Each structure stands twice: as C-alpha cells, then as structure tokens.
Image: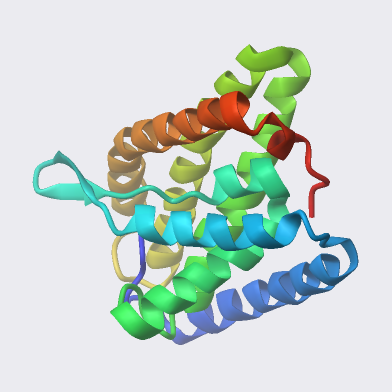
Length: 211
C-alpha cells in the first residue's frame, strides 16, 4: 500500500500532502495539550512495534504479500490523533531511510494509513464496543475495526491512483479491495492478539486518556 514516487500526478500528491499536513499540525497541538507521563513510553513502544511489524510480510496469493498496518491498534490504545503522529513517524522513516514509499507520495501514504486507518478504525471500534460490552466487545471491535481500516485505506489508495491516471479506477478498486480483504484478516488477528495480551497483563493501558 506504500505508493512509490511517480505513481501520483502533481495535483494529487500536493493535495494529499496539504491535507495530511493539516492533520499532523492538529495532532501535534493536541498531543502537546493532552500528553501525560503515561503516554510517552507507550508512544515510543507503539512506534517501534508498528515499524518492526511492518517489516514482516506474509503471502496472500498470486505472488502478492501484505503487512500489518497498525493504525487502528494505536488509535484504540491512544486515540486517533496519536495514531496520526506515530504513523507519520514510521512512514517517514520507511520512506527516507528504507525507500519504502516515495517522498512525493508521503502525504498520500500518511493520509491512507495514518489518518483514514486511524480515525475510521477508532470510530468503528468505538461503535462496536458501544453495542458489545466487556472483553467480547474489545476483541470483536478490534478485529472488525482492524479489517475495515485496512480495506478502507486500500480503497483510498486505489482512488488516488485512479485520479492520477495510473490505473483505471474500477480496476484499481477491484484489485485493491480484493487483495486487502485477505490481508485485513491478518490485520484483524494481530490487533486481537495484541489486545488480548494487554487485557491479561496491562488492562490499564486500555483505559488511558485518548489523544
């Protein structure tokens, strides 16, 4: 889902960069106001966890592979604005050091994975936990929101590529949604596994003030 340089036309990558820039600036202001001593180590741990987890790809079929995104897991624990900050850091490092995703496409990648993945995942999870209480709600909400966030992020990526004329919009949406519906199962299971572990060893982390 990391878009390389040259895949987006000028108007698209500049537009997505501006949108992401606005979200990042708001996220920084909110973090400065709300961040506490309990948040600081968890922010670092989550950034390291997502960065490491994204380095491991798993096969999907037809030579395609996918990886954990992590935006929804961060949003569940720390809130959607924290997800924007952490995903921006992870994606910037991947882009600048490991050439995973293009510099001109960085704004679009942050939007797709950090903003769409974090915010939609957070609110889908919150809605499900409103109707399903307790541990079951946490785990069901974690899986469903993880799956949905990955698929919706992939659809945004396909739309951007379609607008840029890189691939026909219908083909892009069909291909990206189909592949990432499978990858999303892995995202959901990793999210559930992490939440399940935290419920056993550090349930207090699920009740931190959200950023």
